[in-house]
Length: 185
Image (cartoon, rainbow, N blue to C red; front, side, top):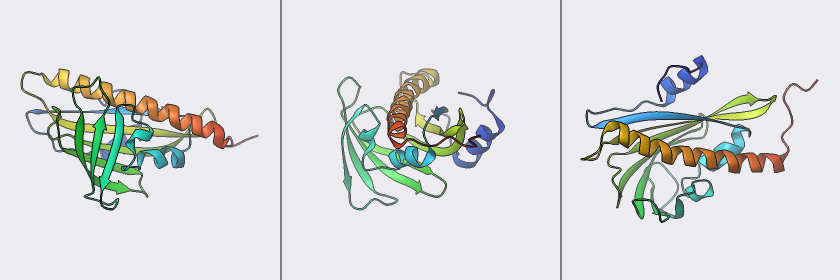
């Protein structure tokens, strides 16, 4: 996705939270998802570095080594159907005040080399109710034999699935939570 068509608020959040150092052999992109659930609920799922399977449909199992802190490692088992079975990932940033999570892939049997992602979660109003804007950006090496466009398309497809699942889970929980409309008249 590119910056055209973005609102001022979206551009502001991307400039503030989604900075990646990009090398010649890498591609980068970002995706935005608007979720009809309050930010505290969405963040409660996103921040769980130790339980990505709560909303990421391609994760079957996750084991964290040590305490949940910056530098923590997790071993993720990937469901069949993807060109991978495992991924080793490091927690780079977990900011509960700004609602920002950053993860770097440091190993695994896949082609996502030097992959780093940032997810930020922001409150907004959707249809008069508390909602959330989720922005996920990434940078990754382009594997030999692939183009930047092919690589970005593949990673964006995975992130779109994850963000759709995050929205579905969050919205289901929000209905159970019965959040009240904002500015009721």
